[in-house]
Image (cartoon, rainbow, N blue to C red; front, side):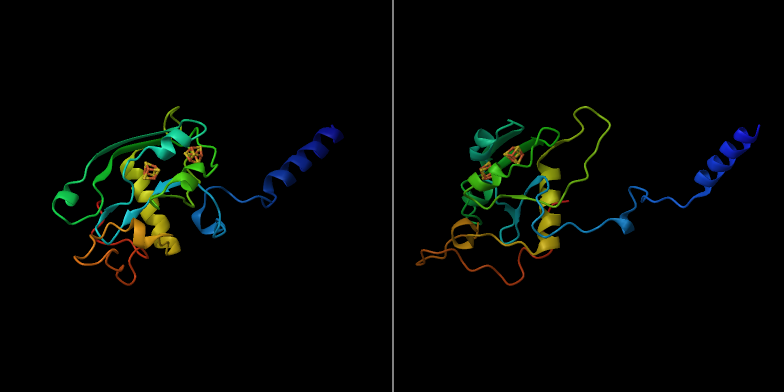
Length: 188
Ligand code: SF4
Ligand code: SF4
């Protein structure tokens, strides 16, 4: 009987004790990731044109070691209208983030500054294929990353979609502040 009461006291003490771990998820308690943290890959938005940097060239798709990416390109109507230097533009893009190993190879092989390892890391889903993200979702992740970090392309002269001014061999300069915030010209 005494042992039973002692056990009950221990149980009650434990039940009433302040938790030593944080509840999850509680956004206000989450720590910010480090600036160089590599989360899931995301596609980036060229605010100067505006359109994605991605041309759908498939280089990253072929290089991905887990073959979790697919992409399809199309003719860029803005090129025909002389609003963009990109002849081709991404039409559809999908990454199965459930198979992505965050290796960063897709970022390394992209020649167009079109993809970055974002800070996104909380994408748990109940469905087996719930982590398949499409072009719109990848662009949303990318624009959030651009806004949070003030990202700018490593080679704006080469990869900007701004048409080359007549008589010039370079693209028109980027306007100040472009890429540092989510603009109203971005699709929803
Ligand atoms: S992200 Fe880069 S490498 Fe991949 S399809 Fe787009 S432009 Fe090509
Ligand atoms: S980070 Fe690696 S595994 Fe993930 S999509 Fe890019 S190449 Fe594929």
